Length: 88
Image: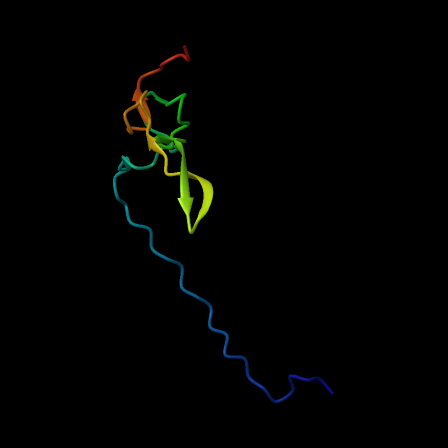
């Protein structure tokens, strides 16, 4: 005897999603996406927009190093440069 005898499945196949015919819109925040314009990711921060800035601090009586980061001085936080920029 099968464990599923007498039971009906509640499975209903999903209807396929209808795709919208929208124009391809470039997302300004999509750093690693493909775009029609050439651009270069910042060589110093690697596209993060900030670099490490370790600072000595005393937290709860214990000396520690805290890294809050600071804005990248090469790209000024923009994370990328327009066009092709070779590393210097």
